[in-house]
Amino acid sequence: MFGAGHRSDVTRVGRSPHGSGALPNFRWGPAAIDDDVVALQVAHRAKYGLPGGEDRVRRDFDAVREELGDSCVVLGAELDGRLVGFVLYLRTPDALFARTAGFAPGIRGCYLTLTYHETARWAVEHGIRRVHYGLAAYEAKIARGCRLRPRWGWFAFRGEGADKYREALTLQSRSIERRLDKVGAPAVPVPSRRPAATEPKAEQWN
Image 1 (cartoon, one colour):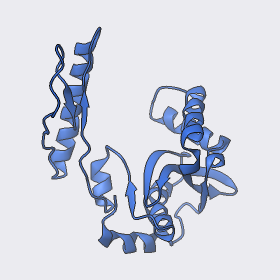
Image 2 (cartoon, rainbow, N blue to C red; image 1 turned 180 degrees about the horizontal axis):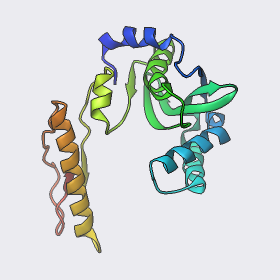
Image 3 (tube, rainbow, N blue to C red; image 1 turned 30 degrees about the horizontal axis):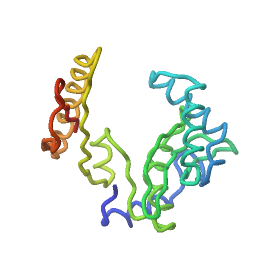
């Protein structure tokens, strides 16, 4: 989420030409998630070794269109008439929630300009007061004027494999806590207000 003092600066920068020569393109509604968006997301996942191919991406986007299509906003970047980057947001009356993104390889400056500069410009012009970028990459987000806000989750695992799930959750929680410590925003544990289950204990994830 952008701090109020950062908004004017990032809006001004976003109006400058893209270093890649790409031009911003804004679409909304179910039709905004088209085959070009799917292709970029598939390539993006493959680049970072994430599981699932085109079928998985299409199923995911089909579900988003069906359940949240009217809330979809796709901020894209076009170069020579070709989509080379996008960020998919879900919109509420005064906020954007980043859902996913994809960028073609070799397009310099596109990610930063589209994800932060152009997003902030579009948000201001459309009455959006907050942009939520989700978890992870805390250092990069703080460097670009975002503020961290805590989001807590409580998990309970039962049955076969419960111990492995708890172990994985503990490791992930510790990793997140270390990253938060590095940016000066240590996680403060919050105890559950609900009684523990009879067998496994509720796990906490920051």
